[in-house]
Length: 441
Image (cartoon, rainbow, N blue to C red; front, side):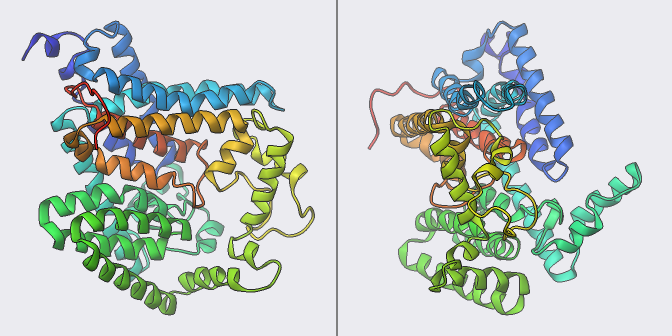
């Protein structure tokens, strides 16, 4: 072991980072514990870095990786800070800003987890395994009616607190396959769609085209049964990118044809899928409310978001303040909402969320972060791109602007997006990344 590795803060001191990342992801079904793991890991990393006065930083991450992770954090966090200046509830807004500072060491440690070949293999392989295990668990639920993994978590919750993970009303209201996340957290489809690049890359690497096809079919069935239409689009983008590389154009067309047939069968056999397909077809009608009904009321939400943009164009209404401002901008006040009772909590579209909550300044900062992330990709060599491809794809499809989205500034989805950003930066510019001299072709 060389001196760089032996010194405090060197590589050997960070071998826990891949296990920490995987523990955090595996605990997503238990949101409070997952958040505690994120915070404790980020604090441990920060204490270790401060204690070593960042000595050995070059052994932990390359200079470009340090810069890229910090820039991506700034593109996410600075819009919050600027938006909080004149938010209606400044105390709450600045509280959110201060709490989100935990994400900076979180990004550093997550990037360090994949900065070496061994760490990258453990982390990406572990993410693939988690995605595939959750897929198999959901398939068991589709056949038997119960997710074995969620049942175990629910029993543990009963033993510890006397009540389950979800209330009876939440279980009754569930309208899709819930899997390990449970009927009170119906995000399995979009989570699997975002993690699928890791699973498909691992399946292809180990078993070739047949492995890719088997994994794509299994995850695809779960995404259809468990996912929103946003997750269907997200997964279709993943299949398009990875399938083109794995199979070529003709075979990929056959895969999409098989996927369309799978959707037709699910439409016939699953009332929940049928309802979502039927709702989508409303967009093709000539009725005035057809498009809004097809979008589950999102047209109304987006109109409110645009109203907020007009009223607060520079720095928005403040982080997570959409719900507080919705009533004042609701274009149909007093009318029942397609999503049920209550106000809308966020814009359900990442561009409109950033614009409404952080304004034009926030959107420009997000675009600057995206531009620098793309520039880093262009300047990386072919080997670095290949290493980072699963993380890059997972991040790209999760923020694809022509889709609907979960709240980017929420605790859960915000941490997911920032984790993917850190994995991208760390795997693209590992510890021994060569210094780029110009964009690669």
